Each structure stands twice: as C-alpha cells, then as structure tokens.
Image 1 (tube, rainbow, N blue to C red):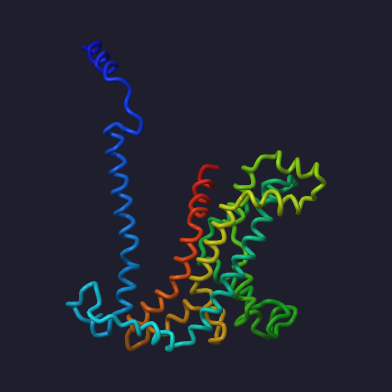
Image 2 (cartoon, rainbow, N blue to C red):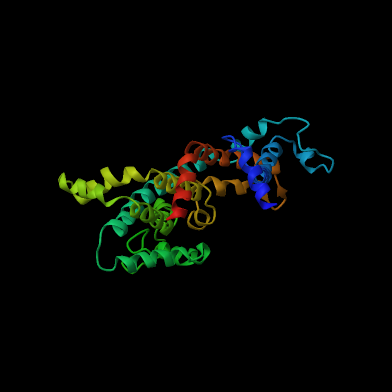
Length: 307
C-alpha cells in the first residue's frame, strides 16, 4: 500500500512553481484574517475620534446617534483652535520633540558606538547599568527628576546649594534636558553597531581616519534603521508627553499641546467635539511621520530582535 502511494506521488510529478500545499495556503489565509481583524481593532478608535470631532454637542449627547455625523461640523476644528493658544502649544511641543530627537540620536548613537566598538575597562559594567535603567518604571523617576530640577544649583535664583529659588522650573531647561537621552536608544544603537563587520573600521584606520570620523562617516550611515527607529520613538514620546510638562511649567508660554487639550475638560463637563478635534490635530503629525519612515522603523525593530 505504501509502495503504491509512493509511486502515485512520483507519477504526479513535481508541484508547479508558486503552488503551495493546502495546509500552507490555509495557514496563510488564517494569518491574513487575523492581521486584518487586529488592524481594524487598532484603527477603529482613530476613526471614531475623527467622526466625533465632526459632530455637534447635541448629537454626541444623543443616545440614538449613529457612527456618522448627521451634520458635518468642520468648524469644530477652527473653534477648538480659538479656545486656547494652540499655536503656541504646538510650537512648544515641536521645539521640545525636535530637541529631544536630535539630542537622543546624537548622544545615544555615540554612546552605543563606544560600548560596541571601543574596548575600555568597565564598558560591560556601563552597558549592564543601561540595561538596569530600562527596568525602572517611568513614573518612579518623576519625583527624583522633579527634585533635581527644582534644586538645581545656580539656576532660577538658587544658590550653590540649590536653595532660595525655583531652579529650572518653568524653563526650557526643565522641558528638554531630563528627556534628552534614553537607555533604550543606547541599547538599540549598541546592538546595531555590534553587527557591523570589523573590516569597515580597519579599512578606515588604514586610510588614516580618526575614531570620531569612523563613527560619523563610516559606521553610522550603515545603521539607518536604528536612526529612524530612535528618531520616531523619541519624537512620539516627547510629542505625547503630558505629565512632565504639566509638573514643571506654570505659564501658557511654555505649555505643550497635550496639556493644552485639558482646557476642554472642566468641572461642568467635557466639550467632546472640541476635545476630539484637538486630539485629531495633535495625532496627525505622528501618523504622517510613521507613514514616511515606516520601512526603516519596522526594519529596525525586526533586525534588533534577531541580534
């Protein structure tokens, strides 16, 4: 019986190119269906937010309201922008996000390169300290960072012991410096630099290049996925940061867009149409940036996961 089945398989000849076995095709279909369902679950809240931003307050409060607006109120966006100085908030968020992105990419890439390609005493210990820093929850660091900013010596009227003034509170220093470098960025850059062939730097040294020029001109252009990944994650984290800017600023001139959205939530209720309009505008920059850099972003995470 087994011999007959074997002869039958041989007589059938090889499977045509591009034709997959039924089990493989079924598994691929199931995968596509699962990914489609997950994608819909992820995009539905964004669609709901956009559609809610185009409704009237009465329609939002109505129990019989459908998903689509009965009257498309595009004026909600203009009215939301007039409710607070959102141009100032957006400018501040953009300055902070760009500053964090540039500093994090620059400093973390240099630190990652040093830990990966330069052998010095204590490099392993320093790397393990970065790994340990990744395990510290974000909100446990808020109070120590606030105290450091508040009692910064010789800043904001403080004396050399950090007393007598407000330190860096309500200043650009408090908004930019504490989030300038992240342990994850250093870790990611180190993993990418480790994977580069040693022949590159050896050839560069034979050509007479110094260590910094090897880092800047030879090695760093080879890790574009890491650069894009760190830049996007840093910009997103900084742009969406709410708690830290709320704690360290007191004036509208330094408020950020996420804090500005809170003007639509009062003791008398929430202006949902304005809140959703403002949130939509605050979300658009991140959507555009991800669409532009998604290829390198996905490649960065996929490659880092294989190291």
